[in-house]
Figure 1 (cartoon, rainbow, N blue to C red):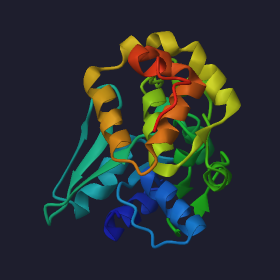
Figure 2: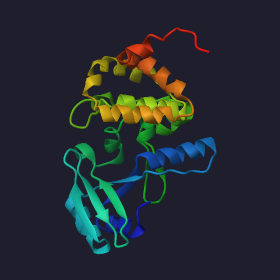
Figure 3: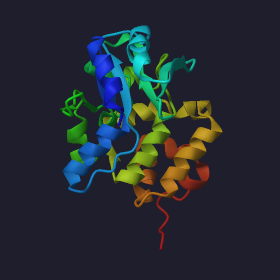
Length: 231
């Protein structure tokens, strides 16, 4: 998690920092399933103040701070102990957690944690984790526009396999309409998602996901095995 001194400086400057991404998702999942939480990646997204204000606020307590990245700029921080952290700038000019969540991919990834440690779920992510459902937050931003990413479909595949989840009907229907955009995804990205799938405990859920979304037909050799008995 982020150093307390950095978070305090952001709050003093009028910012509202929230932990987003994998950390809240995995924390909620652990609580639901009753095992010890071991979340790894936790990003901080700050609302209410701009990037320059954030940088000015934290500069007194860090060794280095700067903006990096072209398409999706982030604030990169190096502490005096040499640790490195990143702060996300809300996409699309979002000013609230609810607005920021709409630019994320699936509801389980739209959960946030506030500075007091309280879960903030504006998209129904917890309910979908409970039911094992992969659901797109907002189809308008999932694969379209400046913040869209068609590669998110493949990301959903490895999530299905790793977490034993199934895609909801409306999300699958939408994904079928963008199946032809498979070629837009970088080969390295595709391979990375399949590598995660291959390490999953329930890879069959990933194949079911690909079938439900129609994306299995981007892999003719796999599609030919539909309906073929396997031992």
